[in-house]
Length: 180
Image 1 (cartoon, rainbow, N blue to C red):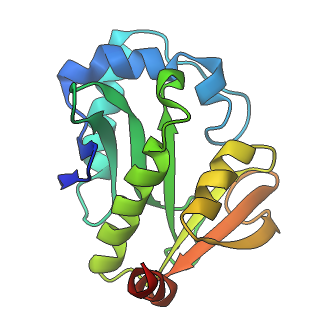
Image 2 (image 1 turned 135 degrees about the horizontal axis):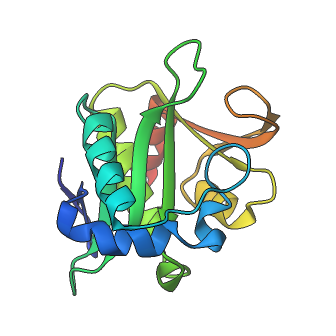
């Protein structure tokens, strides 16, 4: 999958991106927001290469995937955007997520990448896309709000402990596109 926005290319992770992936995923300020339990930092390039192989597997069933976000101007990989089935999903609920290198925070890249991936998911027929975050991840929740996602409050459905939950439906997405 390749999506382009004004500033970004959303594409599969490549093995030549391994050093940048290691740089991103070996940072506590990034990894502390990912998944359940204690953060686990990436340790070396071998692990980065294995993770890239795993991302390819997760991207084998469109429209789902785990992609890199590359800045078009200079080819720098800024981070990840994903569209995956939530863990412990009873009804195939799909999650959108993102995580970027700290040097890429505060430039609107997460919102831009997520908007493109939301469109990709809805164009493929998904009826609803969910975003969840740790309850204290206010930066990620701000992105969810900028995307126009509906705040559904605190849930303990898919991950261990409580998560902030935001939802965008296909109908709301279409309505939002009409008003833009």
